[in-house]
Every structure is written in structure tokens, then in C-alpha cells.
Image (cartoon, rainbow, N blue to C red; front, top):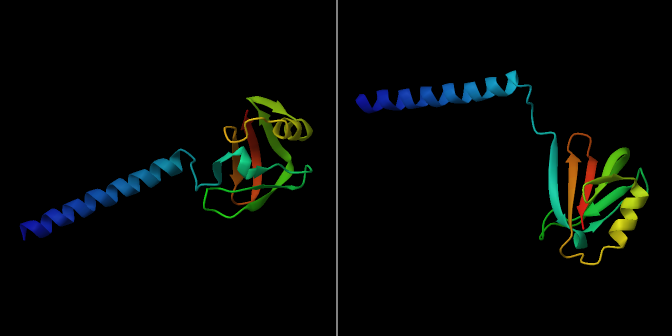
Length: 121
């Protein structure tokens, strides 16, 4: 009987904790995950050819290549500086140590588009 009461209290405390977490998330305006960021080696990345094209990359070493659409609103950054797509493509093409360069792709999951692409050379 004592064990059953302890289990009920533990379950009740857990449920209250979960409810508080959801309430906090709702109060703070935090909804479900809408974007995912991927950190990719430059060797596993192909930049988009046009403003409404696609970037191709491997999310992980064992993942297959995938293409995700970019839009005119996609932002491009090289070494922390905002650039146009054309300048981004030139910087990526001119990179010398492609194994050490890192690309961060921010993928908006609901629209299945890329929000931003940043490269550190």
C-alpha cells in the first residue's frame, strides 16, 4: 500500500512537471521546432546556382546527399559577413582547405527551404 502511494506521488509529480514545462513553453511563445541547423564540411556541400535553386549537402557522414530549395530571402554569410549569392559562390569556389572549412545550413522544416547558409573559411 505504501509503495502504491509512493508510485502515485511520483507519477503525479512527473505529470505536474510535464504540464509546467508545456505551460512555460506556451507562455514564452515557444512552439514546435520549425528549423534545423546542420554543420557540414565544405567538401560535402554544393551551393545553389541561382537564387531560387537548391543547395546540395550531406547532413552527416553516412547520410545520402539531399537538395533543399533556397529562395530570394535566403541569407548568405562568409566569415561572419553578409554577402550576395554570387559572392558566396566565389568564396566557396576559391576555398583552399575545403576539409577544414565549415558550412552551417539553417533549414526551415515546414516550408522545406533554406533560411541561411554560412561558411567559415
